[in-house]
Amino acid sequence: MFMNFTHQEELKSLSQKAEEKIQPALKEIDERVEANQYRVLEAFHKNRISDFHFTPSTGYGYDDDGRDTLEKLYADVFGGEAGLVRPQIVSGTHAISTALFGILRPNDELLYITGAPYDTLEEIVGTRGEGNGSLKDFHIGYQAIPLLDEAVDFEAVRNAITAQTKMIGIQRSKGYANRPSFTISEIEEMIAFVKSIKEDVIVFVDNCYGEFVEEQEPCHIGADLIAGSLIKNPGAGIVKTGGYLVGREDLIELCGYRLTSPGIGREVGASLYSLQEMYQGIFLAPHTVGQAVKGAVYSSALLEEAGFNTTPHWNSKRTDLIQSVQFDDRERMIAFCQAIQAASPVNAHVRPEPAYMPGYEDDVIMAAGTFIQGASLELSADGPLRAPYVAYVQGGLTFEHVKISVLRAVDDLLNKGLITVS
Image (cartoon, rainbow, N blue to C red):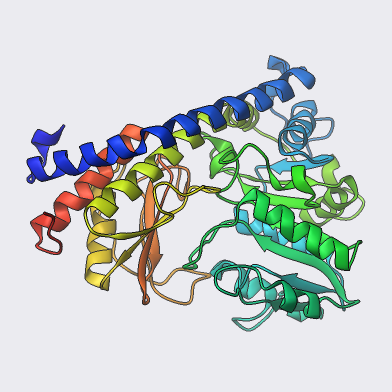
């Protein structure tokens, strides 16, 4: 492999050092994959999954047993009472929006305790844009409590919870924030804390990028509702579209009313030809997520050897797929992302450039030569062009592809004289 790089010896040395360091971490990942695979397989057996569950429905989708059983399967895998798993949910943001608008009512308040959420939620809550159709437009309150030294400010949260606080929002993954992602044990502590203050508060966790990285999910440790995207972890890189919600039966019922309409809810929604890939996707997900996490650990170790600051550290506990890499300036960040694109299996010949993207305040560069458009379980590198210049590297269907791609990126930066390695 190294003979295809300009700086063969330097890269071979960096890679060997990185791989030697990470062997214990890779073994731990394999153990988690086995535990998660067992949990998924048990759910398949419990729900007696059969080939007739893959039969498509059309039109209204009444009496779609494959769809309904898939939702029971998701509930069992993710520790909830019920699930809503549909190709009609177009993204993770849409799944989150369905949860917020499904549960909250005028004069209620949403309180995010993990700092400001993803940029794409700003227009949903009404802090950016004209506010049409936002929570603010429906007179639903919103606050985000800033983090204190990269941790939840529990005292500020205590002071912020009022009689109007109906939902607590927790974002598991860092998103485009320069902070650590929150582990399941940390989320468990958050849930216990807010429930001790207001027992009936609904805890919602944005679970995007986190599924199957640890051995438990947020509903296992007390979350009332979670949401995510099927073109991220639970789709294993083969599901073409869709999203999911899992949680309490009554909350999922309300989310179903929001997704379709009151009086109809979860009873309709044709599955078309999506069921087989959705079943197969969640079955493959523990393994595929494991491959991506291995790639993230290797990327962190290799890039640290090359002199970059990375978060999380290669030996840190992980709770999501995201590996961030900090650059000195926008030129290095752009060059890195372009190199990742050039190592992609699809559209490798395309040169990404920073540009405006709906839902984001700053120009964003996105390298994603993926089989499924925007699939975050496939290898990608992206980020907003703002200081500090941080690229968020995530996904990878195979460990080997991640290794080749990151080595390609370092080689390109060396070729352009943007970095040096000893």
